[in-house]
Image: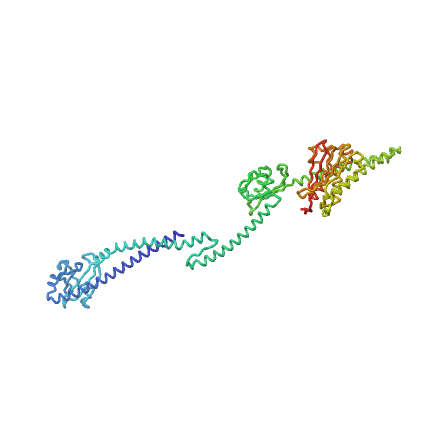
Length: 565
């Protein structure tokens, strides 16, 4: 724009200078021509008067010295015969009666004409005037002399034109800068347009730009807010999301996807998918999506199981990109496995006592048992298995109620008092095996459900007694900790738990020593119930044990009630 304005001004200046120079030279030429013709008329009239006054016009003209050598003097008879000529021999010249200026002079006393001379081949101005009654005096001036004067002033005029043109170049540059600079400043700072001087013509344009700037800023703010909202949603999604463009490069990826896929690159945006993951099934699913086909499946990423959904993003009939959703289904698979194991274990645990009961009952029904003592033994076995079956069903129902989470957890519970009650209930069993139970600690309360917490303590104490050595000890303590937790510890001198079983000890129906558990009559759900009760109270459970060196269970419960998420 700047260059176009500059050269436009330069061309305008040049054209103006050329036109003005041509016009001035033309006017000057015509003015000089008229002035020259006027001088020629005055000279002719003066010379005619002098010739008539001399008495002999031919002799007068022959002896007359004219200061202007460019003027040609011719004296004619009324019949057109040349009597005198200042530049040629009269005898060799043709008759001039037919010349227009001669005819005008014969008719009106004077005449003038401008034409190309046949003899000289030049454009000449003629003026004829009567000289007495029988002669005509004619003066002629060649235009070549007038043009010579014009040529003398033309170089000076051309030089002045060149000087003016050079000056106009600088003026054009200055004017261009004054025009363009405000616009350049405005273009460099469109967000807050500066003043552009007195260019009233630009004001509507600037008003429209300011209005559009406000609209654009408003729209950009909305876009930024929407993008921030979308980013916040994506970053807080538990599901991993990856968006690819049509060139299979990553446009967006959230934190969950980075975590699930174990990306080796901390900033994979703008890079191929292999910068995020090299899982073959996932890469193949993306290839299918780029061909317009959706895909889903399960893949393993270390210890995790991930379910992925890959769908094409269509733009008309073409695939413009791919969106991929990744979810961690490890817990679902684990829960499914636990449900399957639970169902199998329940079936097994129920089948064993039921088989025993059914077998003994069938033998008694068929009359195979005749003796009263055998009948009592069989009845006792049926009773024991029935009690075991009821205990198992009771534990299953209790565990189901705990998992449902319907119980209120807001009542203040005195843990030390509950521990004493549980120990009191187990005194007879402990005395039978010569096991000492000691309960001590701080009289503190925790928010929770007293029934559930009592069951938790009782199960821990039962295990400490059941799996203890003859003449062993059990310590139950309640202590306040500085980290806003209450610690309930149940420690024994029993057989202990091997380290290889620590991770599975809280699983349902899991037994470290199945033969010993059968002897003690356990259902295999006690510690699982303990774990679920602790989790319902937002607590933590820690196990410290070695085989043959006793066991220590530490339960940490918060002092204040917490909201369950």
